[in-house]
Length: 329
Ligand SMILES: Nc1ncnc2c1ncn2[C@@H]1O[C@H](COP(=O)(O)OP(=O)(O)OP(=O)(O)O)[C@@H](O)[C@H]1O
Ligand SMILES: [Mg+2]
Image (cartoon, rainbow, N blue to C red; front, side, top):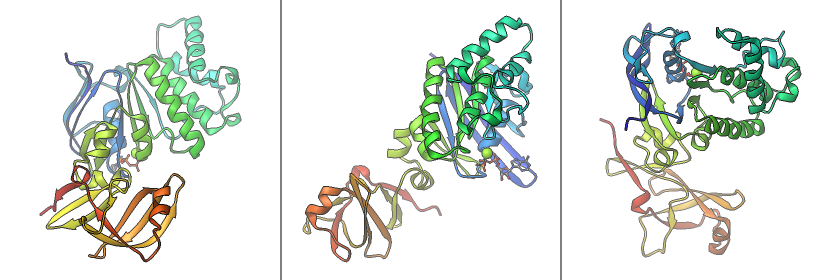
């Protein structure tokens, strides 16, 4: 059975000499939350705007729910959208902002609109605050209002462009969970842009990792974390040790390097510093070829082994955790 909701097919987009998207393809399933993750300027917003119809691609096509949407105007694509800046009307209350969105949809009675707004307000837990103005709300509440406005229209899918990046860490963590649970309750297909790898790992069903206008990898959080397809993905997601060996780039995570007996090891390092992080301790060292390496060890183990700055440790790099990439010619 074909479960695909959105097909992004070989999209290319340039702005003058700047290539924003270079032959980008992805398939997004019904009900999925997909994060588009990548560094600033890699083309995330451009991709979202092309999906929305706010921008036209130079080539390629967009298929929404089985229908070629490449040349459809935004109003015919049936999505809700939330931006980084809340984009609320300051002279309207929370409820007023949501009703404004609903009024753009023709054929709804006043009573139906009020009912839709009420449902959306409850969903984002703002019903009690419905008569407040944006300036009376925290950033998180403003962003929840923007989300309610998008959801109230009962769109077929949601587009979120860094909706959490203007919020402080604690509010952000809470809203991540809120957005994810609302998304799952509604079963609504959602594409969320972020440059925060932790956000993508914790929220997404699948992640589209982009760099420099191209897709580097598409996979579940576990897949991109455990089996990064390219050195870029390896370095961009989580912490990764990389070093060169026999013409390859080798990559291994700090938690996967083991301290070996001196008789059975792949390499060794001299400890430069030890950083206590609670349950884990991060040990920074230098390899014989002068490259840096770091290990995460249970803090008890570091104590038992009596590790200290200046001491030498023997390391083993388990094959099933060691990724090798050919150095690009
Ligand atoms: N309207 C435009 N005119 C000219 N260049 C543009 C335009 N929109 C985007 N670009 C360029 O296209 C590239 C991709 O931009 P885009 O906004 O999609 O990146 P992004 O991944 O969303 O970055 P950020 O994380 O900073 O939001 C950048 O080099 C940008 O300067
Ligand atoms: Mg952007």
